[in-house]
Image (tube, rainbow, N blue to C red; front, side, top):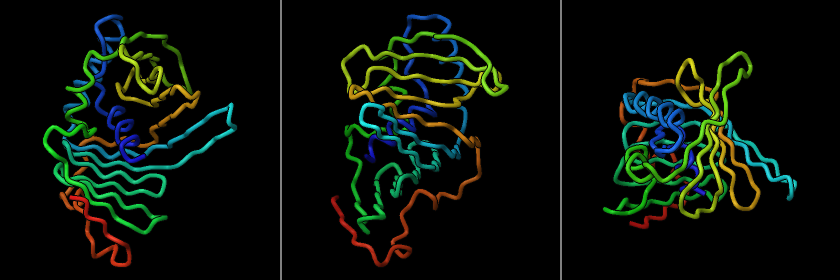
Length: 212
């Protein structure tokens, strides 16, 4: 669950996953990636939705994300995940526990920085169309992975005028759709660094599981 949320969210805000097929889509994603990379920090609020009509499952959660380079603080669905780029703390509210893990060199950890390297040119991109939604001019881009994955495609909805993502949907192979709707997006928000370190004094009654 933790890596899934990190993968999806960091993909959302650091799109470097374009492929050299559809020239219009490539240009849009290049401009989006360039603009996003220029941000020193990000503060994002979002609505996460998971829908599977076959199983009649419909879930939604509000979430918050702070990002500075490889550091992030993610709070969603009863989990608080904090990383300072070297260590990851995962606080699971229902279990009343905190798991501590080190980020090993070469380990596949989904962060804003390495996604730009790991996912470049791994997808076939296509501009599906442009339309007006709720008074906004949007561009719809579909991404199909070249290699087999546990999802079949990704759909991006981009604000054409503001050049940032409005929503991001993943269609998995079990007919589930995971959607992240951005409700607040503030670049270059001032941060003091304490946001990316877990303060154990605030969680004295929880079990700490150090897996380093």
